[in-house]
Length: 493
Image 1 (cartoon, helix red, strand yellow):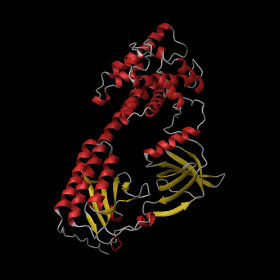
Image 2: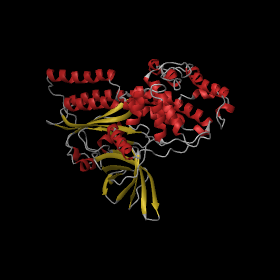
Image 3: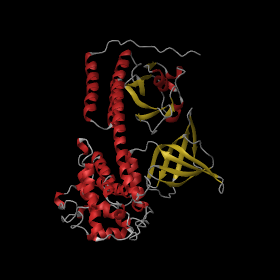
Image 4: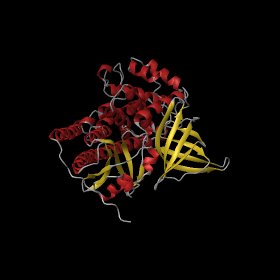
């Protein structure tokens, strides 16, 4: 059956005042693109302005997932569903993603390309659709901007010109952010690998730098630092012991207590850290990393090393690193020359060093906010008894299969494990509602594990969260911290 033809509406008479308002909205987005670093904020602005200018009821922006050849909703205005996924080529948005053409639909339900399953799932009634591709450099479609239901009549060819402008802005924002993210990820990966390589040289202290980084990040965020400041501290913490590459094995790997001469040699690692990192080119906003990383053995009273800098001359980042480094050294498990201290014993060491070794305010913050709650995994896990509701989103269709035959076995801020009477295909997506004691949250998850428990004849389903919003992550992380024991057994290295 041939595809219905798409009618283009004439521009008609568009008033000068409306054109001026439309141009102002487009210029507002352009100005924001120069000043706003957050992609979600930019895309939200584009969606809001597109909805207003095109006089529509709602707008959605879909991105292409090249790994799965799917479209997924980056932002769906006024929609209760966190994320919608469907194959490229399916529905109007899927058609636009594949063809790269603007589509203007006068009656959605009379167009065979329209997928009514989304309406069924959301309860929304689609009438008219205007859909444009987001085209990156090289004529590569990276997403789709879709505007629904013109409030008065149907979308015109003038509206098509407007959505093209907003689509071009969205494409620039997304492409720029992806390039920056890839550069940042490469940079971070190199630094983290360097830090891990140094830790791996001594099996006893393996993982030390990563744990120090996570303690430090907890303190920085508790102080309300911005994400860039947190990243600088994270990288500095990952590299703080890189100077140990200059310490001989007979000193670094000695199983017993160091002699005074050996201790002096070990102390030189902080100076080596500064010398090594000073030879690395850091962009302007990362140039404090060598100083912060090499200051983890400085003291507030000026008796630390390698420079003997007094507390008032130390940056807050360096002071944070001092606290994090000592706390992890105290709680490190199974070091041959000492037993692992409990959390309470380690906090007592920090208390004793307030004012002389450590910044008193940071020690108080670390203790009062319980910022020592980390785990070797990326996320803490607990064994909750939460209700779980989910529906399966298959590759070919969104098939509602709500179920309460589930029991959550454990959950983290990154995913959950639950048991169910039936299995689910690995790689499929779930629209999940988790009911926790103080409320509920919705999130899309990808099934990464599905195994049958022969004892219970039920299936163990592991789900990794795909799009958990930052505010929900923070809320869940706070909840996990509250229910964890106050003095957990230090993990084995």
